[in-house]
Image (cartoon, rainbow, N blue to C red; front, side):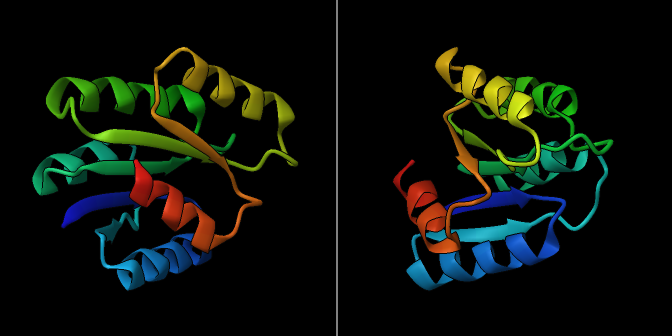
Amino acid sequence: MRIGVISTQNGLLSGALIKYLNERGEIMAQRILTSDPDEPFSTCCSLDADILLMEVTRVPHYTLEERMKTIVRIRSELPDCKIALLCDENADQELAEQIKDAKKNRVIDGFFYSSVSGEYLAAALDSM
């Protein structure tokens, strides 16, 4: 079984995602319940995570800049950990384009828009 870490500002979204992942039985998911910018890194290292999903917004600690710092740290400590970003493409199209570029440039392994269903997101994470 693989270990996934979910860091989102939206608790309802992360709760639903955890439910879908646990039902599939392929990924044991851990939700981060704090906005501490160091927490995704700490949790991933302590659990030896295989997958990290982080939501990106304009809110402090969830910004693309903060998430990129986390990605650099995780890549150095857990090079095999797959990293995906999630954003609301309707609320912030510019941010969505920047995240898409991060995937094109192979900085991240995947990206998702928050408009996709929880079931789809869980299945996509499972395929990473």
